[in-house]
Image (cartoon, rainbow, N blue to C red; front, side, top):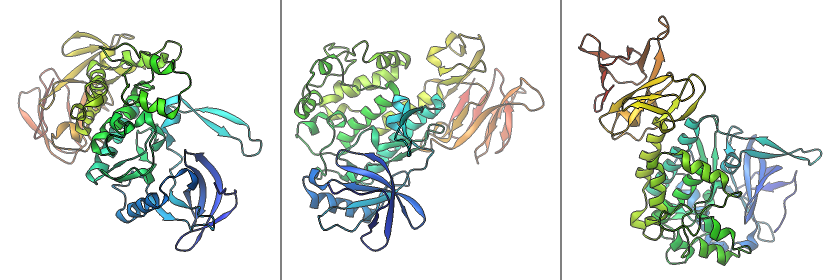
Length: 447
């Protein structure tokens, strides 16, 4: 591989020079540098061309991606080629992620490595999601990224958790590795990592497409929630010297989900997968069942795999079921006590939370100060999972009196204690009381 030095200037294909100012990281076939161009920071991905089997196809695919443009602004899309060197080396320029976004890899392990520029000393800095809400929202954003890409007629040929950058405070997601995206059903641009490929791709039975991406998406989402690999259990750990062929086998024809209810040959190993076992017990049954289906019935049968819509509904429900108690306990409502079908109780401080039932889904939604309702929850066909439509607030003049504020741009109707439905204009609110009913327009909610 032809190396690049810090301080070196790299000429771009159509003119101009980018100055290399640092190293961001290394991949299996490239090194990513920090570069300055036209007064802005960019990521310069410089390829080890010796590790790319079909260089012409790889480069042609990137060129086509540049011409097509990104599915949306969440993708860190290739923008410019560098000028090819005399030895045939080249790279691409991409937008640089903001500092507020952390690699998903670091968020899952809980820290990032900081290298001091003067001494080279490596230290660890904690990197964590600020809330459960942010983590689950990140999952929703990842799902949305897959959906947008498939609507664009393209899919991933190589992907891992390293492809995602997440804002730990909001759950916003940026998607990298876009030079490995290609049209559905096209020849492999680069060989992907076995742990993230569908079994039929690992076994060279089929080419990547939207169906194989459903499997990859499930792996990424599993790692986000459970902090482990869905197929790395006892069977894989005991195979000490793993060649690439061994990995393709363990994630291909011999793959066994670590929590397969009918096959216990690949269970998580205590002392190695403790976190995975702990998190598996925390999540509600409907979440665990979704991954069981994805990695058992859906392992070899693509028709059984959960779609983007399936996972989006699951993650939106999971986010809606988070309770943040004033005592500091924040968790999914299944980990709170339940005095009756309409009420949850904090096991720490014994505070009780009422719930709302919605006409467009079966689960009840807990009510607490700061609870937000999103457009996708009150409009059945909405895909807007980020815009807040309503929020549970405390009355400024009467502490302890709780109400729901209409944060949307639409008029609602709410049944008041006088038994009459009143119009609730945008920006206005209404009290929570035992007989409350809310008409959002297409959805009805009741206490």
